[in-house]
Image (cartoon, rainbow, N blue to C red; front, side, top):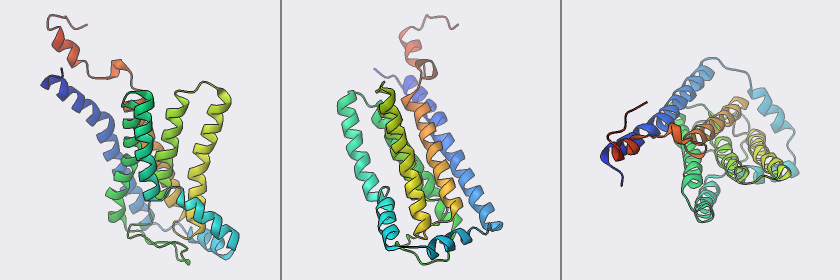
Length: 234
């Protein structure tokens, strides 16, 4: 049975290992976004070059590439994966890790993009422009948050080297495909995509350290102390 003291310990643990890092990441995202707005980078030339070389084939392929991390798609896939991992692994650790990875990056993105307000690249857009800022790329961070989290879960249960390599090749390729697609379609600047990648990686790392790869020694030990009040701390 969880005592109030034990519950406080768990709340403190997850606050320090998840909430605080995400707040720091949100602050860093806002700070970098403000720096980019104050010191223009001239990266619009990249978008103009890609727009000038558009073809019907690439227009179609990048449309599919973007859809790999469209919000409805990611939400449905996350819900399905959460249920599957819970049933297969018979515990909540993998599912909780995936939820924190995906929604952690989403919360940081939503908390910062409205305040940054970077405009979309000055080229014809091939997708409807959402009301959020161009910086950072939510599509890219969502791709990392979902696909790389899935890869970590799968490779933690698979020992075959070839399978592990194949899984990671897909997990790395998808965010890169999404990033290029967003650039090509005129929806983001290069720095938007780069920071989206970093944001996703950081959120997956935070969630993995706090949940997926947590060691018992790092978790709150208050329950043990409650059960054995006469134990002398070492």
